[in-house]
Amino acid sequence: MRILVIGSGGREHALVWKIAQSKLADKIFCAPGNGGISKLAECIDIKIEDIFKLLDFARKERIDLTIVGPEAPLALGIVDEFRNQKLRIFGPNKKAARLEASKVFAKELMAKYDVPTADFKIFENDNEAKKYIELKGAPCVVKADGLAQGKGVIVAKTTDEAIQAVDLIMGEKVFGDAGRKVIIEDCLQGQEASIIVIADSKKVISLASSQDHKRVFDGDVGPNTGGMGAYSPAPIITEPVFKEILEKIIYRTMDGLAREGIDYRGVLYAGIMLTNDGPKTLEFNVRFGDPETQAILPRLKSDLLEVMFAATEEKLFRLNPLNWDSRPCVCVVCASGGYPGEYEKGKEIFGLDEAQKLEDTVIFHAGTKKQEDRIFTNGGRVLGVTGMGDTIKEAIKKTYSAVEKIHFEGMHYRSDIGQKALY
Ligand code: AMP
Ligand code: GLY
Image (cartoon, rainbow, N blue to C red; front, side):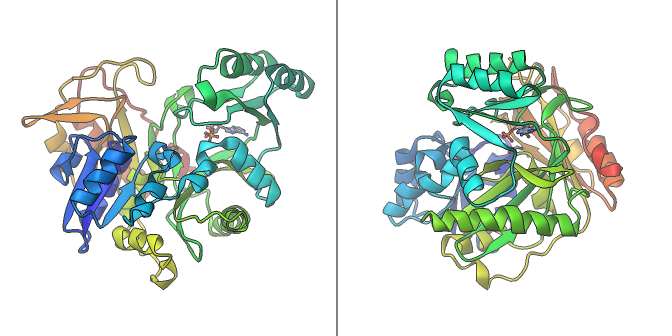
């Protein structure tokens, strides 16, 4: 098969790395890709949102399967356009992608189909939202309805903070149209985990559980980021908890989507908070998590390409259960100085070859660029250094040994990835 992967992050490097191991893959292209991906796939200079150029490319290059990494092209309807042209593509269509692109849509669906989530109210008017905040008090969570590059959620400790969030989203319109509606919801307490499944209308296949680390600094402090590291499995997701999440969250959501006449084929990612009252849904994404994917895929022994292909044909029910390496996997993100705020690009990265030589280690590139034979930084999250071990402790040790071999000016990373899995 000729494959096109869309995206340029660590998640896409992990996807390309896994697909390259499949017997079914003959040639892989990636748009636009990055410095690491360019070793495994032919990178083509087309932007992820340029749907018609991607479509043209897929047609001309006779691509058998296109795999979409990030949410933006899904929300724009890339899947509908490809399917209209009879091109095979893995991912949910535009209607289904609203599960991530509109938090209002997701919350209303959850309320209608009894999917556990925080209690909430939706507002189209900023004064009414503020009055409600005064009435309910803090803490509370303010969420912009639409896509806001992971910045549209404010967990407010005080009513002042929550009111400021409403002013930013609805008054100053910092997220543009994505902030026309806001959700004010109860603040949940507990540990978070990510449950990612691959689904079609007939069957759900779950991947191993994982846990992300969203805050920039050790001990979960500082601003939110795209994710500073992950590990898989998440020991807090015991078998009975996993079963409860599948039954009450994943299956009910898939069933709700079907009842709404929505054809769902692709990845469904549920961000979960394990509360004293059971697991509750924080958010849905309609794509693989980043950096969760970098910690999950090294553990997957089965052929991911076969699974993705089957999902496009609604044939997941024909597949054997997935085979997993039982060893835990840890991914530590190395970021540019200043990230998640402003940062510089173009710093040369040293030590990659030496780090890659270590056993059970894979270095996934995110914001990198290859120039001749040298690799330079080209984004906020630069690398996802991944290691496996017989125990989580061992996996952490191996991963940090590899991280310590790598350096670039301004590089920073969290030194406590995976620690939560130790207790
Ligand atoms: P979301 O994009 O909706 O997952 O939100 C991003 C992050 O905000 C989550 O990973 C949580 O850490 C936090 N968050 C979202 N909703 C809530 C909530 N209802 N209670 C507490 N924290 C939340
Ligand atoms: N790691 C969080 C996300 O992919 O949305």
